[in-house]
Image (cartoon, rainbow, N blue to C red):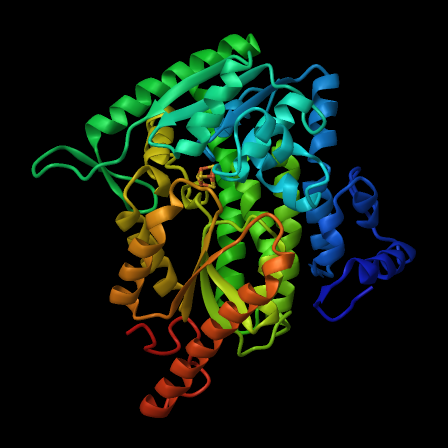
Length: 481
Ligand code: SF4
């Protein structure tokens, strides 16, 4: 049942689902109409516009059934590991063991948005002394305590050292409450001294070899903790196979991002792309199914690109987005005002880079840990943002600040300055709380202003260089200043 690619409301999805079902739609076990998630409390769906493809339907259903999947895994006797903070490393190790399922309790970050604050997780965090001076990750404290969202993991790990104060403090509070936490340390990545042995990391940063050795030793401790929890050895062979599977996910995402960010007309909306990227972190508690979900999205995206079809106007302004949004609706908003996402740094770009497969597995994973944009300086992070923004031909940059987040106070100033100096691109910093309804007009106006500025700049360049339709596309015009 083909329909023009577009972003549709939940009401539209009711009709679309009925049509697709009547036409013989084949779904996974977690499939079904999206409306049922609203009945389960995911009210934000009522305010979102979602892609109308069966591939997007599968993606949303996969995302919104994770809690049931975790509960089922526990009931089936699987060992559940909660991996706090490292974003993309310990899950690769955990999924190398056949009887282990890993997830990020930090993912509760989005529950206040998706359930429109009805879950009461922030109030629980408040009552435990973790108030709104912390970022929305404090929702994980509420979720661990009330056990209404995910099972209490048999093993909780947390990376510390070069991590935000928010997670450090909240994880310590979690430990205080009697949940045992396995701590492992990541040093702040520093530039190598002149002449000091150094290693180039996935994604391009460089770290002293001595720091890689420190992380290697820490990951060896993580390996031992996982082995003892699973009651099985975690061999180098098993880890290498786990890295291969993680790389399969990363390759699919790499292709999906490349196609979407470089297509003339945007083939897949920002919201679905954000969710797809998030799957790289812990595979939404099912690694094999993640691969299937991404393959479907890629097939759909490729078909749209081949047919020259998009979900947005072809002249949408190409925006690079920094930091994840606490309110998913803001991804819609950018598109509503004439923008499209053509590059992202959602705090975990290291989880999208392929893991080296020609090194001993623990060495490869240690390099990936240090490639985390958040364990080095904001200036280095900005350099990577500039490289990627240039690669995808972005015309503007948005930093979405996270309320209470300890890393947000100055990073916007640093990143904004470097983006302006290196690329000369217009730049805006907005703050996005879990629910933006009250401030939507302000956010909309600021995004509109950015899009208009970028359009003006595009028109000016067209006028002075005589460029034609290639302007605003990667490689299509010298619009980087
Ligand atoms: S959003 Fe920022 S402050 Fe909050 S947990 Fe993530 S890295 Fe830490």
